[in-house]
Length: 341
Image (tube, rainbow, N blue to C red; front, side, top):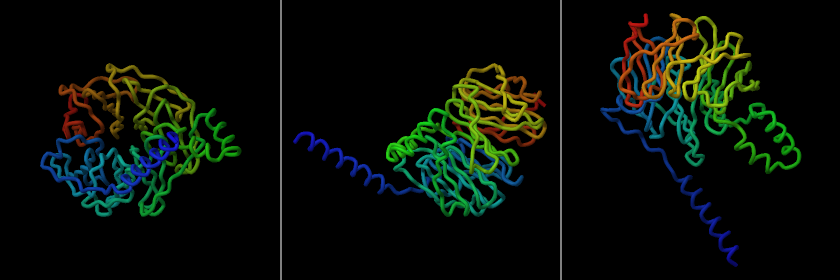
C-alpha cells in the first residue's frame, strides 16, 4: 500500500510539474534605461552597417556606430547567449529556455520562433548560412535545424558526435533496447558551446575538449581526437589561416594544419577565456573573465595584455576603428587599442 501511495504521489508530482511547465508563457523584456549596463553576452557587426548586442533578461540593443545604443522590444525575458545575422535584415538570437528569436527588419523587432522552458536547457549559439537554413546548438548536445528561416525547427541527434565508446553503446542499444537508446541519447553528448563557419567547413567546439567539423553544413560530422580535457568556448580562423581555440583556465591552442594537430600557447593569465576575435589587420584578441583582454601580433603564437582594470568578465567584442567595443558583465564598453597598433 505504501509503495503504491508513493508511486501515485510521484506520478502526481510529475504531472503537476509537467502542467506547470506547459503553462509557462513568455513575458516581454522590460525596456530599461540601464540596459546598456546589464550583462551582455554577445555583440556582432551586421553587413558593415550597424551592430547588435544581446544578453540577460532578453535584452537586445542596436547601435549605428558602436557608441550609442538603443534597446529593442523583445517578447521574452530569457537570458540570451548568442546573436547572428545572415544579412542586413534577417537575424536570430538564442538563449535559455531553448529559446530562439527572429528579426526580419534588421533587429528593430523580434518574434519568438521557439520557447521550451520545460526542457530547462539553454541554447548557446546559432548560425545561418543564408536567410533560410540555420543551426542552433546548446547544452547536453541540443541541436536544432531550420530550412525555412526558422518558421519551423527540427531537433537532430548525431551519434557520430559521441565518443567512440558511446557510439558503440548507442549502436547496441538501438538494436536491442530502443527505450534505453532514447534515454541514453538524451545525455550522451557534451555541451555544444560554439559554432564557427570557415568557408564550406563548419566547426563545433564544446565541453571536455569536444571538437568536430562538418563539410555539409552539419548533416554529418567528423569528431576529432581530444587535445584538451577541459571545455572550449571559442574558435576562429586568423587572417594568416591558422585556427585558434580557447577555453577554461586560460587554455589557448593553435593549429596550422586545419585542426589535425594543436599546439598549446602559453598566455599571461589563468582566467577562463570566453571568446576569440580575429581581425582583418592580422591581430587576434582573447576575451575572458576577470577583465582578461589579450592581443597577438604574430598570428596567435604569443599574446600580451591590454590593460583593463575593472576586472569584469568580457564575453565578446567587435573591432571598430582603433577601438574594441566589448560586451561585458557590466554592459557595453569601448577600449582603445592604439597602444597595440
